[in-house]
Length: 426
RNA sequence: GGAGAGGUGGCUGAGCGGCUGAAAGCGGCGGAUUGCUAAUCCGCUAUACGGGGUAAUAGCCGUAUCGAGGGUUCGAAUCCCUCCCUCUCCGCCA
Image (cartoon, chains in turn blue, brown):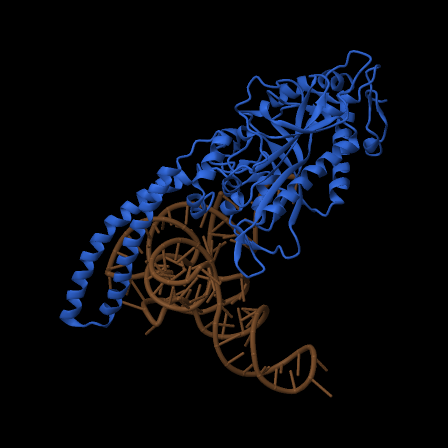
């Protein structure tokens, strides 16, 4: 696995990276890294020189005979004794080098707002008005239970904490969202993928979910992990390959079940469908040429695709630019789309769109051949297309009516097979 | 779960202790020739890191890499060990 960023780049842009790390609230020690890197180079050069010597003598030994040969063999043994020490030192230095490299964050974009946490994310857009009701609105748990769309009690009985069943029209509604997603995103030139959720370790390391995120992942007794997003398998699709970008970016629309332990979220969103251990998601994944402008353009495009989808559903939303403290190690910039949730009186995240430059592709070893023939690491981006069942929260809560029924968004009605959800058998 | 086979460059595929960073073929690039196309001929054609060099490239020098990691050896793609992966057959399940 290659480093996160290129060591040359890190050394030449140390100040930029330090400022970026500070903005992201991430600890990294570049001065130490530079010192270790110097040491690494020194040891490496020493060792290379000795190896060159060894290779040269090896050839001499082959040609030599008798006493001459014995003499050369003796000299060789001395040389090798000296090398073992150098190799040992280099190995130690490399370990520290690798460890430090893993902590170096990608530089956030200039446009990323300053801030500590998601509370400091900057609203960049709002669409629609928070839904106003001439009656006391219910939350989705109440609505869906009453309408036979979900069963949370039995969900918990069978699946444990955060367990749920979707039922009846809840199933139809979720299915309708998938159908509409297929239609909306499918028309934008994506290649469709149904991605595995049970994925080997490599792709998690490559996408940056490991080693840091061990706690958040379910692991099997075979050493595989359950992915929390199709991004993992989809990015893994081309790992260790040289891809062809001459015909434009690679654009995948991938569907998969998603599994999250939510290890750090005990006590948060304990009710309903906001935060569950297993769900389904359509994900947009893009690989493009290593050009910043291209990444930016596609990032905006991915996010806009999802905004459009929400607009088709006519649910009030806002888009935020995530602040530095809310960015992951590899992310350059991130937008979240948040939908209005009347039951909570606030916007809740439904989508997240980020770009990484070559941060992920270096780790995944995904390259392409540039017009001039050189091999370069591609850029990568990903964004939620739409997750279920979380999206159902906003649909049912925003579309509820005074009589307790739920109006099906127009764009979904055909797929659901009705325009109002009024309970089982209705 | 049982039994076998195998992992070599962009691909196919040889090599099975030194002359192999790796035959041959295909593909690709450059050139010659044929008025176009096809065909033929010649040359070139892995990656990373480092050195030196440059305005920057290229050439040049060195090291490493034949699934991964260890070992044997003066010397390993080739021998030994461990692990990973792929394939085939049987069984089992859907």
